[in-house]
Image (cartoon, rainbow, N blue to C red; front, side, top):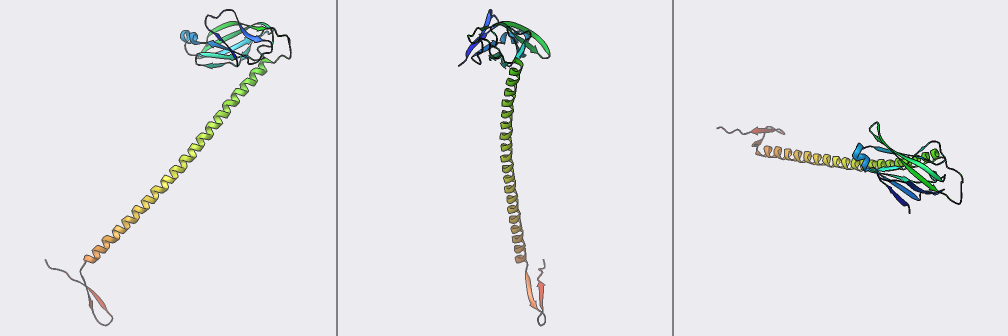
Length: 209
C-alpha cells in the first residue's frame, strides 16, 4: 500500500517524500488542471534535485489527463535533507510554465548506504515501461493477425459457396435447355417411311395454310 500525497496549485512547504532508502512507498500526485486552464493542453515533465546533488535528473513520472504521478524510489530518497522538484509544462514546442516545489527526505538510522545512480534508475524505469508497451503491442498484433486469418477463411468459404451455387444454377439452366429441346422435337411432326431395302427416309409433313 502506498501513501498518496496530493499537490495542487496552492501547495506550500516541503513535500515529504519519505525516509532515506524508502522505495515505492509513496506517490506524489500533482494536479495539473490549473496549468491546462491557464496555458492550454500540454505535456508535463518532472525533474528532481536531491539535497547533495549539483544538478537535477528527470523522474519517470506518469501523466494521466490533468494529473502527474511520481512514484518515489530509493534513488529519490538516497540523501536526507531538502531537495527540489520542478514541473515543466510544454505546450507544442514551447515551454509554457515551470513550477518548483521543495522536497524533504527524513533521516533513517541506517544512514547512507549504496547510493543509486539517478540516471541509471531513470533509464531502467524507461526500459521497463517501453518493454511493457512493446509486449502489449505484440499481443495486439497477434490478435489482429488471428482475426485476419479467421476472416480470410470465412471469405474463402463464402467464395466456395458462391461458386457451388453458380455451378448448380448452370446445371439447372442446362437441364431446362435440354427439356426445351426435347419438347421442340416432340412437337415436330415427322413421318418415317421406308424407301428401298434397308433405307429409311425421314419425311416432314407440311400443312398448307
